[in-house]
Image (cartoon, rainbow, N blue to C red; front, side, top):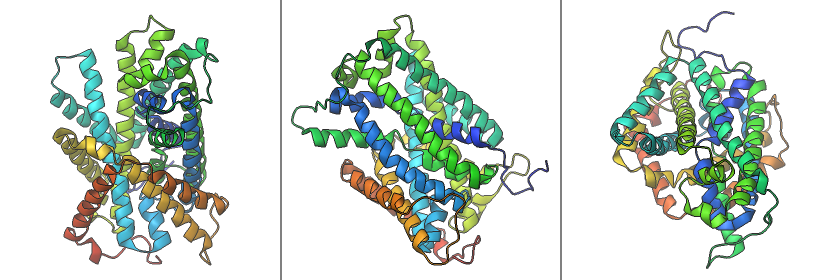
Length: 437
């Protein structure tokens, strides 16, 4: 098979690698701490918010599946919105928001990584851990998509093994509680508590949108990407529901909510011989995987936006030997490291759900516009027109239950993006990829 020409990303990802990438990104590190907070809101019915979030996520997942089959480009949300709205500035801002969500996620989980390292080796200074963490990820990302994919597959397997330990640990108590009972905290109604829990659990489904940004490194992306997106969401949903059911069966919801390591409680309850160090090691792999897939997404998104004229052209440079976007990788490395070291990531992390719910709303709206536009060609993967409509509606609905303080953060990010847009002179640049838009 001939190699890719210089300046072009290497196509090496097949269906299995894409599914592993998707599962690893969506599953991430969140479920290891998130399940306790969800149980604290709704009690033993903790699996129900995950089911609701699945319904919201799968609608937008189908939308991304068709969009990825129509436009298999690394720019993802930026190119989809450009095709729909034909406004480069709007596409730039959507791409910028997706990029910031990925970088903030990297910075957030880097602190989780440092925390787990401290649990095993308390004498290591956190700043050295953070710098070493990002340098390790940068090396893997730069070395090649094959190496990144293999690392992702290994970390995903470790993540899933931790979830399976929890599932089997709680199995002996399955059926001991009512799984349809909503028990809200004092002062909250069941409905309000349920939807707040749904926003939390929805955060655990974020990540499938990143799969679109490796389209130019995928073999037959029009065929493989739609399948991988839907399969990945399905696998993760099954794992989440099983985890939620077993966790509340083995440990009382209030006890789960009070713990910073709720799944460790479940594992220790079912298998007393499991050491804390083993679960901390599993969590380290989960955190590494989350950061790696977000790193890959961010660098490929920058590369794709540069090739479209929506970002400075130097970000589109590809290393002649490794065939990876090395300049974009370096830029993401520095941004994530600065966020991590300055400590601003906590406030930014609260905005991730709002950022991506906003992006999901506009992605569904983009597909609606494209599908109703006269003269549009048939996509290799087609969904009914009702799906993006309900996807947009559900994403918009959940926005009302996001912490209102997150809105200010998103406005600040948009202001930052606006400054970059005009300082770089992007408003005067012509799009390079497709003059028809």
